[in-house]
Amino acid sequence: MSEKMPAWDLNDLYPGMDSPELKKDIAAVSAGALKFETRYKGKLAESSPDEFGNSIEEYEKLDETLSRLYAYSYLLHSTNLNDPKISTFYQNIREKSNDVSNKMLFFELELNTMSEEQVQEKMVSPKAKNYEPWIKNVRAARDHMLSEDLEKMLHEKYVVGAAAWNRLFEETMASLRFNIGGKMVTEPEATNIISFSPDAKTRHEAGAEVDRVMKKNMPIFSLITNTLAKDKQIEDEWRGYKRPVSARNIENQVEDEVVDALVDTVVANHPDVSHRFYKMKADWLGVDKLEYWDRNAPIPGLPEKQYSWEDAKNIVLSAYNEFSPEMAKIGKKFFDNNWIDVAPKEGKMGGAYAHPTVPSAHPYLMLNFMGKADDVMALAHELGHGVHQYLARSQGILKSHTPITLAETASIFGEMVTFQYMLKHEKDPKQRFALLAEKTGSMLNSTVRQIAFHRFETKVHTERREQGEVAPERLDKIWTEVQSDALGPAVKNDERSSSSWATIPHLIRTPFYVYGYAFGDCLVNSLYSVHQEGKVEDFPKKYLEMLSKGGSERHQQMLKPFGLDASKPDFWQKGMNVIKGFVDQLEVLTDELGMNKNKAKQADNKQAAPVQSGMVKKVTGLKSR
Ligand SMILES: [Zn+2]
Image (tube, rainbow, N blue to C red; front, top):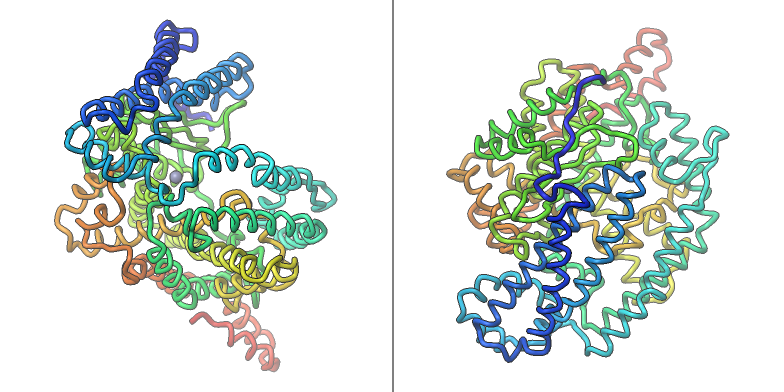
């Protein structure tokens, strides 16, 4: 690709890493934190309401400067990983920022030790009142806090406890090598082959090899899993969390019942959504049953389209514009002002992200644009984050952060709007089919698959608590059970893939995190279907208003203007219906385009050898629903 692609301009943060502006900020934040500590440490509960409000305002200002410094160094570093001068600069800023935030740590701790009455007394000051949502977030886990000594001890012990087991997991995974086609590859490389190799034989070889190596190392993975589950149980009991999922739910600002409703609804939709999809996928690949590792396999015979950066920009902005001209206007700023770093280059971090930086500046997007449909979607996703972060600036830095359950709303919505636009404007039915198949598969990966992970960890943690150590064979069995539920009868799911759970780092590193992906996806689907129904007046305006709330509201208030309530199962059903609708469309297109290889085979067999009726009968049974 010879097209010139823009790089970002970080001057809006600092003119350079040696600039006087940057040095001035470092000096200011160091002195400021010291002053802050002397002025407020140990005095928060006794301060007057106005002093209390002032202290938070000062805290926010320091946080803003610190975050600007940190964001600048991070952005610079992520596009120049091989530059030693920048690496040193990044490391220095990190250490500086650690020093400074250590001085400010007391503030949130003291906030947590205040009684509810004490906090309420301060709310007579309008300045303090303005920060109430942030105070609530900081104090969310307060009921589960232990005495200061115990907290300190747990904090210090963490490095030799959970952190050490996590490290053992990471180092073990990193040391594993997989022999695929005579070549020794790492785990990410092996996973990549499983997902993307167009050759079925290679995929199967890779799948079998991954399972063999994981099984060989199962004693260690099983020990890590059991130990971490026990560690969590001990801490949860001390802190008074009822269920294994509860601590995460509090962090995510969501009630246990809401997560239960999500899980139940997704599971109830398996037959109608994922089972049907994988049945179709088996037909597209022309096999009786899909191998476990063929779930994401490329569909043969589909043309792959290339997009220029200019195409991608026009598609995403036009899509945004069709939804809301206001949203497109904000999106356009990112292109007009060089807030996006587009092209892959030597020494640049992989993947893509949107960084909010600070409210007094603006967000930046980092991409690695290669011209695939996926890259257009990555732009739509990150620009969604960008618009969200841009709008949430009005809340100030403390109130702009959203919990993971809501943080992906704008990005997934941006993708959905763009996807619908591309689908509508795509003339080639095969391309439409490719778009739909890709989107549906990826939506199932974010919903059904993540909920299967969630059910796996729920069962493992529950059995660990109720019955003690969970044996490796039992771990494998739980995995196979939840996978069978999720994938359905058209996917082979047996002892040959039963150790795959050990390759999912989230299950080890961040227990009960994965449902957040399903939460975000289903929430956006519900929101989008309300938009499509057209019953909510001024939907786009209300949507942008919701984004501008940042982290200042919980999901209940956020969704109210749309007549939605996440504690109701029909909320999640609305979301699943969107995926179901895609599966319906795919079934129609499969017939129209003759994509069902099994059916085609059957027709061939009929012509070539009509006497082999046994064979024909068997294939007939595979016809799509
Ligand atoms: Zn995202």
